[in-house]
Amino acid sequence: MRERWRAIGVLTVVLFAVNVVARLVTRFGFDGDDTAADRVSLGMFVVIGLVLAAVAFVWGRHRPVSAWAADLAAAVGIALLLTVLVGPLLVGDDPFAGGAGTFFAQIWLYLAAAGVGVLLGYLLLTALGLDHRSQSLKRYAELRATKPRRIVRR
Image (cartoon, rainbow, N blue to C red; front, side, top):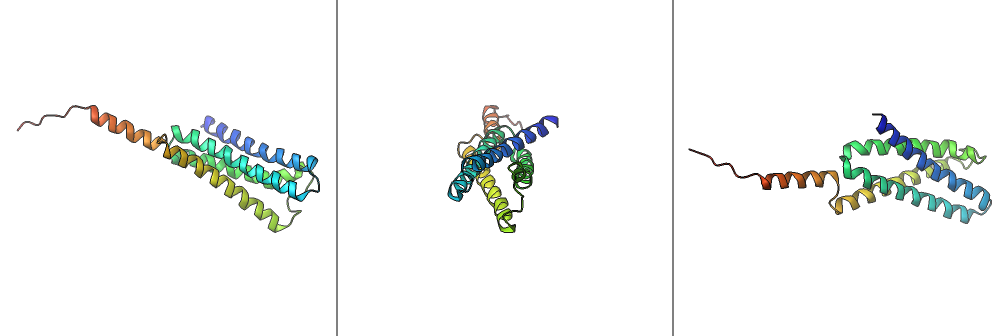
């Protein structure tokens, strides 16, 4: 159980660190330039999606979806809360400074990037036939093919 929470914690910290780096780059590099800030935010969402795609690919090889999906959802949920509520405070802003529309748009964009990333990672894993279920079915088929047929006496 400890290893499971450690993996969730590390993933949460990585996702939050991506957001903090994007906020610091926007704050100190492009302060007042909305176009550059939008590009940095888009890059942040792409990096978050790629990180989650890689995690889904790696975790999906060794564990069934029911085991790692909950861990991934917990990490994304905690990282989302940190990103929305704590992230703005680190650069001297208020989480609700842009209004409710900006606040909820950030949540929806984060969830969309996370969902697309996980989906792409798992679909690639499944297409390559490396996911846990495909490997289990492959082992079952090999086991059934190697057993000799039992002779039935009457």
